[in-house]
Image (tube, rainbow, N blue to C red; front, side, top):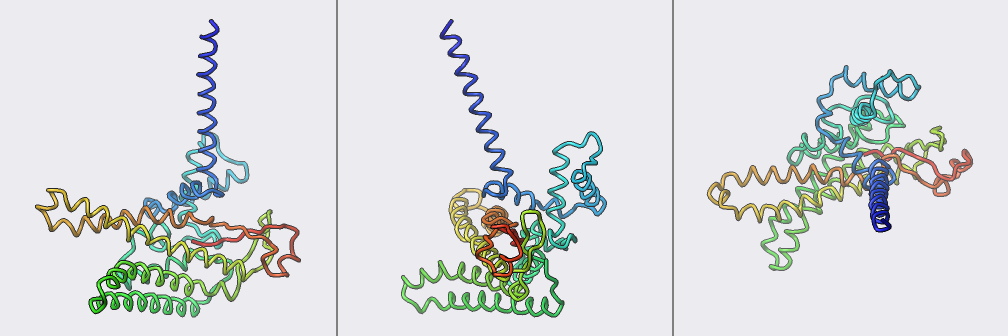
Length: 320
């Protein structure tokens, strides 16, 4: 009898521990303060299906969230419906302006609309601008200046370093191997950094709004803007890393398959598909490195910010 009771107790203890672990896991996956939580969030944000949401469906989602906020939800609305509405709104609407982001320049359009070199950098420039911190208005002339500078510098760096690779035959075998392996990544990463910096240069000169714990604007900070751009630029450095590492490894395995050895013309489309899938996986990982709504200690900001609030920490939209 004692053994049976002990066995039952151990069974329920294991069940309780499993439920506790499950609850902790769900909290981690839903919290924006953890990498896993942000990763889960951004997988939703970059879902390409949100590109095809109709205007009517978007308005329904916004109304549903407004009803929830004001406590006037109609009966029968499930949590799943609320989460889906939140996903659609966050994928389409800019958090600062409350306006729709043009479809190709949403984060959900980053992978599908990515195209070769100069078109790719043009698309990157528009994505960086559309997902910036937009608390300060930017004139059309500043946008065009930033766009021209971003695309020109990015393409110049990428093309210039690719020319260096082509001339690597003149180098010693050891040096040539290093150049051929590392220059392509350096070209892409450098181009991405220039692109982010120039498309969002207005934030450095104007600052970005920082918010207290109640969501009220405390002031504009150039230091917060600098942090936002540095963090965003870092994500653009991490973004291409898997693309330069994983496809060669995967293709070295696939190329040994008999099917591909007898159908060599399929190698190029399969390699392109592998690169595209790798890009799709690396994007949410990269943008999950930092929270979109970042926090910074007031003591690190301008003196006028510290004088305007009693909060020790303020929040700002880092952008994506």
